[in-house]
Length: 281
Length: 132
Image (cartoon, rainbow over all chains, first blue to last red; front, side, top):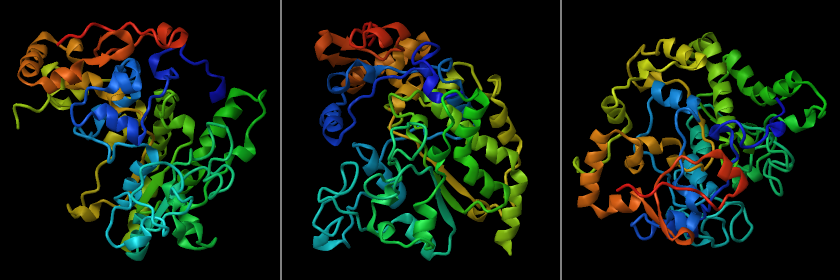
């Protein structure tokens, strides 16, 4: 299963490369239209009104059937990826009052509304959840694949292969505390390293089995930690672009990725129980 | 606020006469459900691991629209009449259920696209007429 070799759009909606739509701070607020919510097709195109059904994305529906879902889920901020992930990892976009005149990057930048480094091309400086956990003695780790450099200029996604790297989705790598951390320190070792499967990419003539094993090697560290009872108390998993369900990557590539994580967890209840014992000691 | 909130997923399933048990689950999800919960202390201390898998910004409507009020054209008449009456009372529902589309010179309702126009002519969707 060479993911690159799957023809787009020919088997089902769930495997279709849907075109992406505008999701910038500006475009999203125009679609919102001061709370009237009536500008989606105009700002984003008719695709914004499309949806999929159970037959298109059966795994997602099965997840929703089986587990609790956030019925009233909404995103943290009407803007693009990184500000929303800042909420995930820090609870805010730097709109905290302890920063003072230096702002979010030490150079006067305001709250984050875009991707990448700050408007001054600087790393952000406010406190993150992993630091809070570390100080409280809670174990944590960010599982990811790294392609290229973990910090500038690649931020973990320095190749054009959609099925390796972290899609620059590890927001901690835009923070100065991590950028200045040394290998061996908790911030570096738990947030700035990961698998590097781009180094082992099969040849284009390799068998499907080889390609499948390569794709599954994304989970080698996570699987190893679960099996050995070393899963941290809090962990984040960051997918390569092709598995994020970000348009135009197919939703069912994401289903495969989620399914791998579930596979690892349900196959190792004993490993988790072992970890439970360790915690009680 | 109870009369203005939309029917949530669980209510929708109930109204449709569907339950989770009626669905054939993929093996690993079914297996996950058979693993007993750790409720040794019945406190938050029983939560020993938190795993956060956050993917990307695919609009949630693509995943969940059939459960939302905006999919009025896709749901049974019984529910649809509820939405119609709400939409009549609240312009906001009307806006959300079908929206103006500049290039098409008409309104767009939520729709499940077909494959062919997506692949061949991405700007020429055939959208259902607005239903509310």
